[in-house]
Amino acid sequence: MPFFPPEASSFAGHVDALYVFLILVTAFFSILIGTLVVYFAIKYHRKAPDEIATEVHESGALEIIWTVIPFGLVLVMFAWGASVYFKITRPPANALDIYVTAKQWMWKLQHTDGHREMNELHVPVGVPVRLTMASEDVIHSFYVPAFRFKRDVVPGRFSTAWFEATKPGKYHLFCAEFCGTRHSNMIGWIYAMDPRDYQAWLAGGSPGESLAAAGAKRFVEHACNTCHGDQPGARGPSLAGLFGRQVQLASGQTLVADETYIRESIVNPQAHLVAGYPPIMPTFQGLISEEGLLQLVAYVKSLSPPPAGAPASAAPALTPERKGNRP
Ligand code: CUA
Image (cartoon, rainbow, N blue to C red; front, side, top):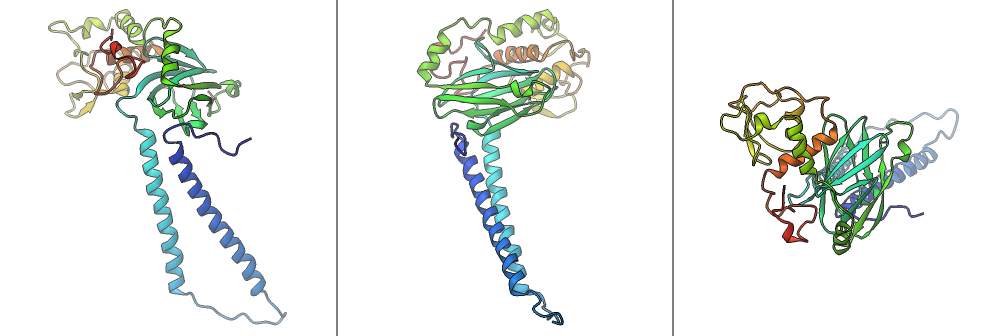
């Protein structure tokens, strides 16, 4: 059994280098301090029953040294750790979108073109993959040791994470948060494939309805289109081109419309009211499943042009003819 899982993502090497640095610093000081404790205990132990201790006064120079050196070392840990953290938490704009729903006790993974997988995820090597994750019940945690990332999936909000697989292979996916009796069975596999094999995998098997198409249906089902249907004098703002744009709020603030904002606008519409519209939208809290919310978000996203360099479908930059083929 190897000591470390394989390094199979673009940031695995950075995480491991930092981890090794922490172990070496810790080992160095543990050995140094442990050795000195034993050495001084032997050297300065009381040699005769009536021996009187000699008084020793502190050394200023020594105190400065053992304050400044550890302080510098922890600052290195802080700066290094922060830079790795930023790398791990900022998905590139051109990432391939995968939508994840966690529930007791399985992972449901959906590609934007409609491919659905249970406890398995196929991804191309060398392409950043962005996960938008929701939980239908309790807290789960998406953990892929070979990719060196773990992200909690918390009910009532979206969690995002990303990775870029660097080596073709089959890697363990775990749930790393105790979520009930069958938590330890909530495991699966990530298949990182050569882009050509990934294309072949996508082409095989019928993808079914795309997430955005499913979202478009729900949009009508919940009558969202009666207010957000782009008709003149509509009671709600138009959603065309909304995703990724700055939104002017009634409170005077602005924010960028991302997945979290769209989700919140459905379940808690009054939280960030758009300027110029009355607070008339009812909440859909509890009326739409997390999966339904993901579909609606995918639909709203499909109404905006993808960011520069982003894939238009589940086939990033591999099949250019698919670009613009959005529902
Ligand atoms: Cu889900 Cu543990």
